[in-house]
Length: 406
Image 1 (cartoon, rainbow, N blue to C red):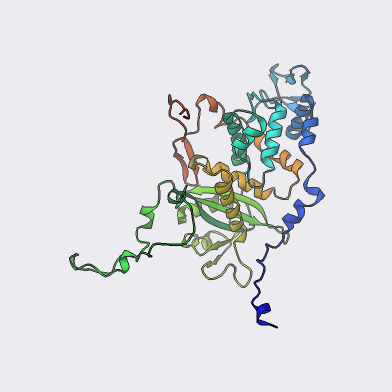
Image 2 (cartoon, rainbow, N blue to C red):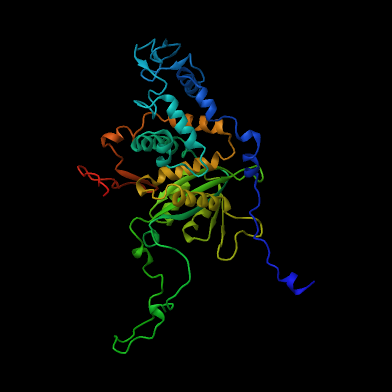
């Protein structure tokens, strides 16, 4: 073999195709599209949602008194009148979409477009697609996220769990934002202060210098948050995780990870984590615990790893930095619940994904946080593993006028 052939550069290795990629290219992945929504009449939209919620558009429970019967149907109003209490109700009464102003068909179209985004779809894009006010579509998609927080990110898991934490806000964001990254370094590398020889006029040296990470917690930005994720391994090989739970914490400490694990995992579960000492207590709390030292290897010789949790971290990072760009800490748990739902429904078809989303979101009852959003009724706290914490909004202050561009 000649020297020229030996020095020929190799091609960059492509990522191996997974089973999920094969599913997305199959016929089973798409069984419902925008054209199907366009063909729905107003009555058809009501029947579509009624079948999702109640399994029938003729017999359903009254949201006011709970009477299950074939209630009186009012065709012109697209509403029912209860045979028990006599009150009228629609298909969205008592749900997160109660007191809606948008037509039901448009809500379905917006929900369909939002649900089928690979890593999410920003409200600004949905506003341009459907010609609605930004606050309207912003509140609408957050009602869907509220349904996922209250109806999806719940329940106890049992099996092999993978758990990990990631920095999601605060750390290095402030100094990197709006500045070009990378490139050649032109200045001379700075020698750390603790490695320099003490100056003669300085005070006499007493004891060893502080290590570089000394006082690291005190130097962290106040808006730094840790996103904790717990994923249950599936029982079918090569199909990945089957259930995901999320939580937001101020730090990755023993108290926060333990609170997260005991909330969502049974005592019979076995955990795979990294080498962080915060997870050391899991061996006594659960049926088993294995740790992988990531500074040495990605997995142990017996195959132990927490790659499913790391996979979610990658999806969340792409969503936070490439789609939504500037998610506030107040709604960080909502965005994380959205990505957990996207992970767990990655093998559902388009139609089943929409049905699943509407069923979960509309079964939690009236919206607690987004009713009256346009009238100034905003959530005043962020949801953490350790409990609710007051949070300020990032919008204009009351009475402030928008700036008019020159």
